Amino acid sequence: MSAWAELLIRHHAAAHADSGYEPLFGDAAPLERLDNLPSKIGLPLPRELRNLYRSVDGYGLKMDADSMLSPWLIVPTSELADFVSSCRSTIADTHENLSRRFLPFIDWANGDSMGYIYDRNGNLTDGLHMFMHELFRYDADQDPDDFFRSFDGSIADFLES
Image (cartoon, rainbow, N blue to C red):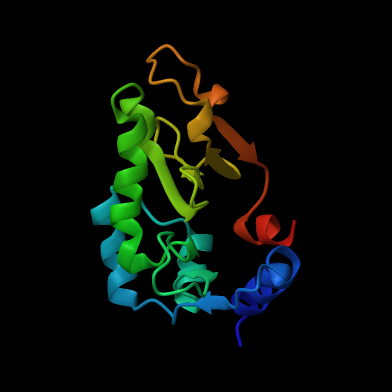
């Protein structure tokens, strides 16, 4: 078992043990899919995310077949391009440049998402960043700090918190 799988099992035990849902883990992502993702999402995959997907391609909760919610917290690579596109489309009309630089991979299943942001020069910014849809006003003058919150740390740090 990989360190990522062990970390996700600990995260599930701490965050979802009382939910009644068992954890759901995808198998390791194929290298070819990981190599093709940057062209589909328009951004490189950060090393940490690529390593996670090489070990576990998606993590979530085993839900009933008729559930209306996605079972995935960490969206699997097979669904990532569509997820990224959907999340970006929410802010694209008012914050087009920012939308192209946002790489969400965590689905909070409530309209919020979390992932990486690249700066205007194409460099990965520190930490993880959560888009909070309730705070977004569809106003081009709205400061992104009003609807994005940052977590200073890595994916592993976040899962351990």
